[in-house]
Structure formats: structure tokens, C-alpha cells
Length: 377
Image (tube, rainbow, N blue to C red; front, side, top):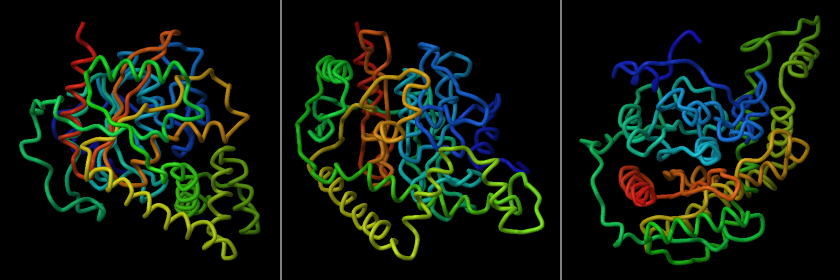
């Protein structure tokens, strides 16, 4: 690219050393980094398994010890899910806290850049550098981040109120993930109340209407004329078809078709229109939870890292891996995944903590305290 993203400029200005670029699912569309244009990335914990996605390379490099921190983009869980699979920390800030200037847009109302690190303190340090207003991104908040952002303050975890939605503990949750997560709650001595939020069952279907629709619109520029490689033809439409057929991957094509369909004149209101209304209701439901509770707690993913190739023939099962993470993107609130233990195979399990909008610092402070408690003994 001819210029750096704002987050890179800010890291470099604070003497950050950019080691390189990491592998990811093509256009950030995938949950396993198997849809990459550069072949799959492997999980350092078990190289027969996926590292998660779409920011699988970012999580893998941190987990392997190659770098202390990395950046990823989180549209529906693409920072938190690979962090969970690789046993590291993944933080998605409040939407608008970090500039998206220089980021290739997937779904503009959902995308957010966030750090992946080996501990919460390192993630907070990176966040304190990259967050803040940017004149090149109109969606960033005008008010500055809490200053001084660091150091993180200690909090009395005994007085923190955690909500545990029962909707996240139904079908599809792996027994070993449930057991490891439940044990971590007890070990950290967290005060948790089970609640019911019926709207949560709509999070994944709403996400997989809104995200592909926005993506279909954003990727229209990759036509061989404005961006990308071109397959030449004497006919403009044929050139578009030849170019996109040859150079776009199977998952990208699948999501473009879904997005184009839900935006089409005959189906717009039936699908995209209803999804937008459901998103508002879902956001309202989450805001109501935060009137009584400080944080929402749940596993980051319903399973641990799966085998390479295991889910490639079943995109629906792949999509359901985002069942716990899409909520934070739809509502625009901050969320973090921290390691909370391992299953009987030695595979990492992630704990996700979700906070109210703009409560990023409180979320990081809470996550650090839980992290410390889980490491004790």
C-alpha cells in the first residue's frame, strides 16, 4: 500500500517495531485462516489444528512467542476467537475508539482494530497508543480516551456484578469448554448471576445478513478496474466476471452472493431491513443488562480449536463458531478474550468479558484481575 494505516503510524511514533504482516482469511472472511490466499496457518499449540480466524496469523505469532503483540481486525470475533484458540489475549475495543483509516473495509459498521497479546497489560499498552480521535475516520469518538490510561487500576472483583446469559449455554457448547469455563469462574471467585436475554438467539442470523450486505457493497471496488488484478476482455461485464471468478476465493464469493441477495430490490426489506431493526432491539437488550450488571461473562467460543479441514465442507457449522462473539460487534461494545484454562487435550479455552460502551479501561482492569487470579497457584 502507498501509505500506512493510522494504527501503524501511532505505533511507529512510539518506537514500535513492525516485524511484518501475518496471514489471515481472505478479506477477513473466515473463522479458521483456511480461506487464505497464502495457504492455512497452523495453531502453535497443536499444528494439526486451526489457529482460528480471520486474524489467525496474528494470534499464532503471539502464541508461538515470535512477537509479544500483534494487531487484528474484529468484525464478528476475528480477534477474540483466534486468541481463544491459541491461548492468548484478544481485545476488541468499543466501536469508534480506534481509527479504521488504512483498514480494508469488510463491514464498515462492525469492523474494529484490536490488539492480541500474551497478557492483558500488553494489550492495554498497545490500545493506549492506537486509540483516540482521527481526522481521517469520521466514526472515531471526539472525546479523548481516559488520561492517563495507564497504569491500569486495581479493582475489587468481589463487588463486580457479572451476568451469565443462559442462551449461551445450550446446544453446541462443547462439554470440556463448559467445564473449564465453570471451573475458572470458581477459581477466580467471581460473583455471577444467570440471566435470560431472549434476543441473543438472533445475534448470529442478524450478523450474517448485515455483515455480508456491507461486505458486498465494500468489495464492489475489487473489479479489476479500480483495485486488484485484471483479466482482460473486450466486454466490460465479461471482464468483471472473469476477474472475480479467477481471483476471489470460495468463501468471499459465497458471502458476496449472500450480501447481494439480501440487498436486492425484492428482498431488501424482508432481510436487511428486518436485520437492522433486530440489531437495534439486540443493542437495547444488552444496554438493559448493563443497567443491572457491570459485565457479561461467557465462553469466547463454543469449542476449542478444531482440526484443519474439519469444517471446510460445512460453512454453517463454521459460522456458528461466532455465536458468542458477534454480539459485541452488533452492539458496538468492547469485549475481551482471556485464557481461562485448557481442556483434556491441552487445548486452550477462552473466557469472554463484555462491557458497556466506552468502558474499555474498566474492562481491561477487570480482565487483568481475573487473569491474575487464574494464574495464582
